[in-house]
Amino acid sequence: MIFAAWKSGCRISADAQKVADEILAIGNSATTTQILDKARDEQTELHKCFDWDDAEAAEKWRLQQARHIVCNLVIKEKSETPRPMLQHRAGRVGQISPQDIVSVLIVAREKGKGNE
Image (cartoon, rainbow, N blue to C red):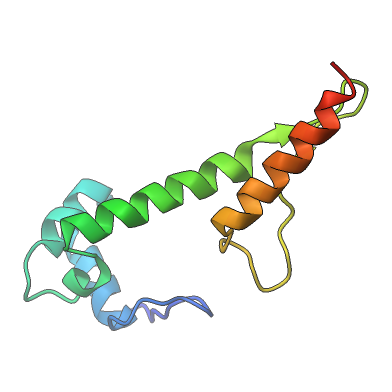
């Protein structure tokens, strides 16, 4: 038997052991599609792990996409090596505010004006 737990800081409220057992019941090579299909059943513990309000889920996904864009965008001066656009700040990993994004873009734009 395996023992399951959520990583420290995880915000999923479902019982980790039940979720692991449900995934293992699908099979050793369970796909994300199979996991999602099982989670559609409201009687499963997996169901609690997903946001089923489509509008809310869509907005969360778009925020995740924005984080992905900013975390993967590098900027550089013409003679510099590329560097991450935003640095991870202690206690704020994954919590990039729109204001942070705009501030960095403004600074980068202003720096770039002198190098055109």
